[in-house]
Image (tube, rainbow, N blue to C red; front, side, top):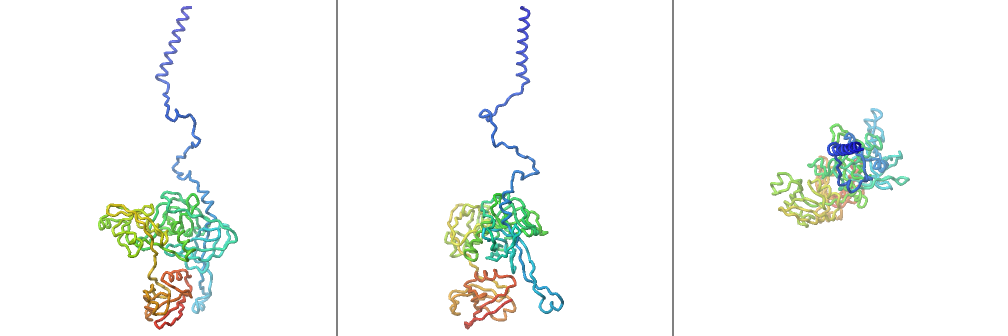
Length: 470
């Protein structure tokens, strides 16, 4: 019995010793994290992320945005009247019989349920009539409501027999570089095409020397001929741009496409509907993006912003206290890094709007409230007539017993130079009274390409004569 107890004690001690060695040297160490101490539950939003880099947009769903927008983008076809001779005799007599032929095609975006459509001006320019085809294949005739050639925006209207799908405007100022976008349009006459990409850049001016104050959204979404006038939308299906141009040596997509920001397009459309033309507000300065030459000339210490080279008299900038040499860094909280940032934002505003301009002056920051002035062109070329017109000097029209009209400031063609027209007054164009050069510009630019122009000319004896230019 004693021998058995001795063996049992030895066995128990051996087991305890063996277990101790296992715990000390062989059992893996258990690490308890702070999260595990607090809770042993699994979060309900736990997901496994696809790390396959070959599918960069696997977690992005474009279907909702596509469904919201594809029915609100239309196919725009423009037709013109041409002459096609059927034989040699017709060719020499009058050029042949008139034929209605398609001259071009593009896209448009329905922006109201009653049929207002925004597109590019170059899509409808020169058309004798327009045909709009919806995504359901219904077709309608369209009329031009107004155009803004400098911004390449046009507003057209159809009278449909139903309420139409439309795309709401988004805020293009809040769009961010790297944000996913969709381009919706009709490239190569392929209707209802949707492509995806990101915003590559903002406030892009393709040619800073052309004085057009461009400020495009740049995207790498595939845009080709026929996409012009179509929609650039965010993933919520909001309109943030009107697709306008591509940069390509082949004429097809190579990764660089450009859209007019929706804030600018909406402002133009609102102006056309309310005023019949674009109301353009301006700061009243000249200047440019900061460069090494400007930094040296104006003693500027910052490398980003817009320097002020001059301030126009009686402008909003002058009245607010902007000075030559100031650096504009911000407008209404929007950073201004280059001149296209400034023009893009100001072009979305109207005359008499007040904007807060933050400037850097001699290393001191100032915030100046500026009331925008109204931009008024002083001269305009009526190329089809061959003359330049200008706003008349004060009291000039009294000599002609008129209260409206513009003065011919220069003859442009050799034919018109023979008639000594300088100083005469154009009182009407196509039967419409004109009060300034801007009204002349609006009438001329809203005409079809081959349409006749009727000019009412008042000579130095006060006699009114009408001339038709074909």
